[in-house]
Length: 192
View 1 (tube, rainbow, N blue to C red):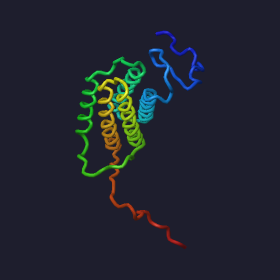
View 2: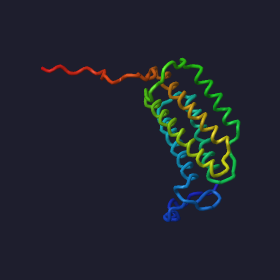
View 3: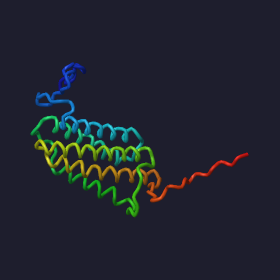
View 4: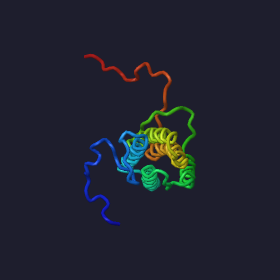
């Protein structure tokens, strides 16, 4: 493969447009570019999770997801181009079942947090939901593969399960939501 980016800056975007993979220029704040940006941000957050010491099965899973997200970004950057097929959604469902089978069933809502990798997985989950919303908005205007939307929907669920799984493997419990936290639970220091 030749050098694709021999020059990082081109100045072509100074007018508020950016080029798609097919050479068409669009506004930087178009729904398509917003969706591509959300996918990029999601991929970056997954990279943050992988920067931590995580179990090998999570490392492998998230690395494959990063490649799939790059494919989604590629698909979005060339209108009408398809890279993501239904089998990728099925793969996520299989991973969801696999990781979730080790977790205790939820009886309460949980708060994002726990270990640092789990907290980052929760951030990635919320970014994934935002990316899904952006792609849904784009799909109202243009033809977008349903597999991309389905993939992101399953991925946000998987990231939630991965957050819980990371806490479990680190021997850290989920943080349960408490309905009435109006009273502080910290102890006041005694005056001398």
